[in-house]
Length: 341
Image (cartoon, rainbow, N blue to C red; front, side, top):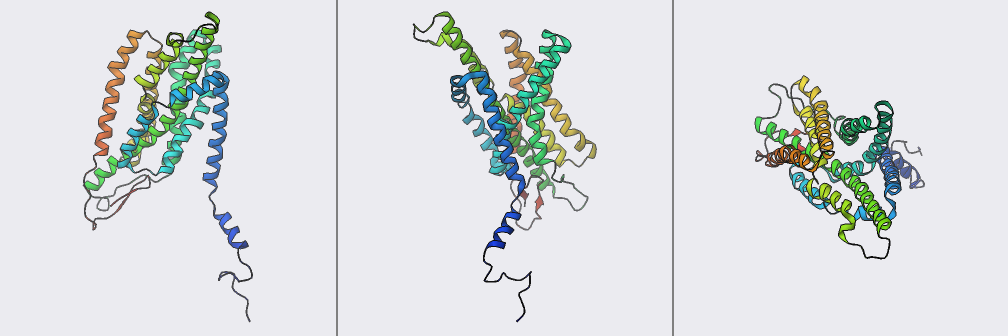
């Protein structure tokens, strides 16, 4: 009797060893490596923040930073009804922003600040670091996950006579804008959360130490003893919870244009232009934070509010996808993984 072929069914006497080995060989290494990287970054950023805030400040910062999170995530979930980005990709962007991007930014910002201070002096070095180096580092760190998940995919190309119909092309553009806003928004939301934990926890620790130095433990604390914490919470959680999503949205829009336009030059310049625009807006915001209250409110009302209103209008336009054609229409592959029938 001839022995079974290697390509044929497995012999009854060799039940599961080869099948288990095959399954292990087929397991993707990318997700496992990404999970380990994000876990390592999460441990690192937790340690770095705890060193600056203390354990009590870290817990207080975590509690306060959670408060604006549902509003931002709720807005992104509404927009994702049109974008239809998979949950796994949203979780990746959120984890990247809160762990990996913040770790890179915290370490790189410290190095850049020290270098610029030694090169330009303390005052000018601090200004250059806050207004130029920090926005570029942070927006690049946030945008890296968009490049890793989007650019390896093929850009949508349209040929004469073979491309999608004009209604399908319009849906493709709107879907691209929605996906770019959702992915960049999730990344920036995670980044802003960790940054808020750091700033709120540090403000609380400073206020607590100042209170102990001034009045000791004899009197019960009041809200006036934590002015810096209240000021930081109002500025970051109430006035500007969408600040980082607004900056990163420009990077996401640049990628969306790069993946859907039929013009080669525009496709090459859109993504870098979006990153530079995000860096510039972030730099203006940082510079305004160093001004007095009156000048900061002017920048906030004259620049940030109109930019956020324009972003909201763009998100509403992207969410208002036109009706779908019939089943007989050809299907258009979308570069982010979705399809438009």
